[in-house]
Image 1 (cartoon, one colour):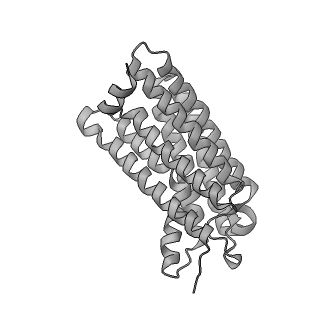
Image 2: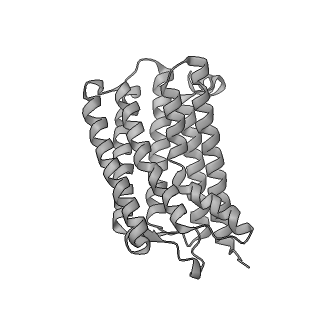
Length: 246
C-alpha cells in the first residue's frame, strides 16, 4: 500500500489543479478561433496546454497513486520532455507571424532542427540508459513528484525555456508600445504571466526548496495565476478591461 505524505499530497493535488486550469485556459483560447477565424488562437491554445505537460505527468501519477499504482517512469519522462521541443518550435512559428516575419524561415528552421536533434537524443538515451542519461524518480524513497534530471535533460529543457522566454518578452514588449490601451494592458498581462511561469519552472526544475510544504503551495498557486494571466493577455474580458482601463 502506497502511503503519501502530506507534502506529497499537496504537490500532487496542486499539480492536478494547475493542469486542469491550464487545459481550460488553453481550450478556451483555442475555441476563440471559431469566433474570430484567426489561426493563431489555435496554436496559442495548444502552446499553453503544451507548456503545462511538465506538471501533467505528476498529476496523472498522483491520481494513479491514489489507486496504489506507480506510473512507469519512462512514460513520465516522455510526457515531461518530449512535448516541450515541439511546443517551442510551434511557438516560434507563431511568434514570427507577429514580429520578425522576414526572419521566420531562419528562426523556425533553426529551432526545429535543434528540437528534432534533442528529441532523437532523448529517446535514444531513454531506451539505452534512462537512469544514467535522462533521470530518475526515486520511488523506493518516496520521491514520486520530484525527478533527479541528468544534465542533458535538465539543460536542454532550460534551453527551450530560455528561448521561449526571450522570444515571448520580445513579442509582449511590442504590445507595450501600442497607443491602444487595451493592447498595452494585454502585453502587461502576458509579460507577468511568462515571468511568473518561468520562475516557477526554474525552481521546479532544480527542486529548490520543494521539501517545504509552503513553497510547494506558493509555486503551484503562482503557476495557476500565470495561466489566468496568460488568458487575460490573449482574451481580455470586458469586465476586466472596463475595470483596469480608465
